[in-house]
Length: 151
Image 1 (cartoon, rainbow, N blue to C red):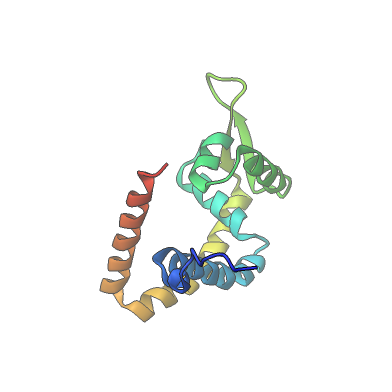
Image 2: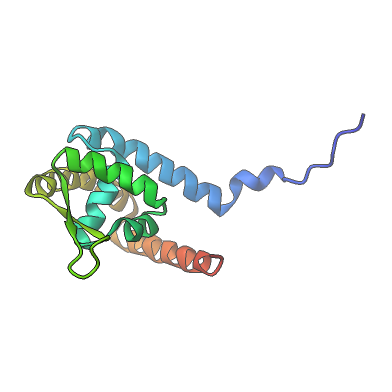
């Protein structure tokens, strides 16, 4: 029996997409213990940050921004609501839509998490230097714009 021809080259792990994935996994691994110290997961932190920056988002909008399903957002919101970090409020014109807002405790928890995560993210800027850090952000924006055309 003969082997099928290789269709995936050995260099596949050297592609930009794999480098992005490894960097993301490394960053998430570094953030996880810091966030755990304030009682959050990386997903919870991301949701809280979005609700802080864009108060009044609903579950569907959050799902699109976070790249997850509305159901995944609903489960996480239920957990964060039970912990007193977010609250749901009825939309002023659409009674079936609930908007999300941080509670006072949610703001305090997010501030603590932000301080912890900030020290980790500062390591990246320190290692690169401010100009290279900005260059990396610009390159990542270019990557995201290029991929937006594939949706």
